[in-house]
Image 1 (cartoon, one colour):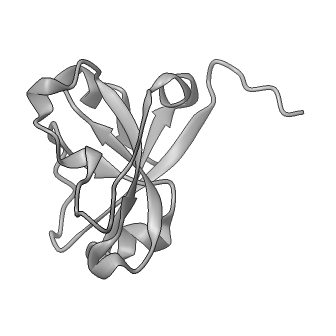
Image 2 (tube, one colour; image 1 turned 45 degrees about the vertical axis):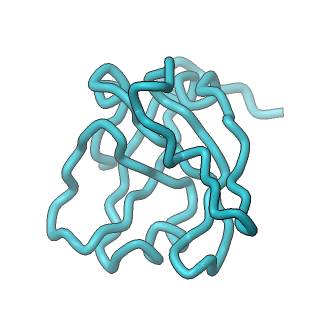
Image 3 (cartoon, one colour; image 1 turned 60 degrees about the vertical axis):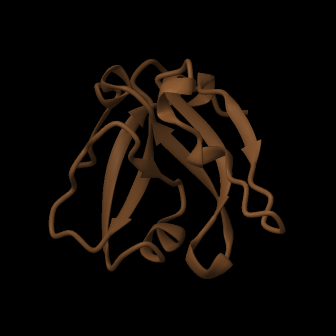
Length: 114
């Protein structure tokens, strides 16, 4: 069993068509760089404290048949800084874990990866 330390981080990815990573409340990240690349050709890596990632609630997944996605909820209705949920990539190519940063406080929990 791997024991994590206070300095452990998890690397997350954001795919975009933009040339720069723009951090903002509502930004979506994933632990899968291949999934991130489906959102845009430029994939940026960020790090998050593993404990913060682990404690973020998992809200479930979207219903592909009815196009209802938990991540599309009004950000003001979510009482957390960071949440996780299962989402579908564009064109429903693959399902992947999404980590969504909800608040400015949540943004303080991530930083560009080295």
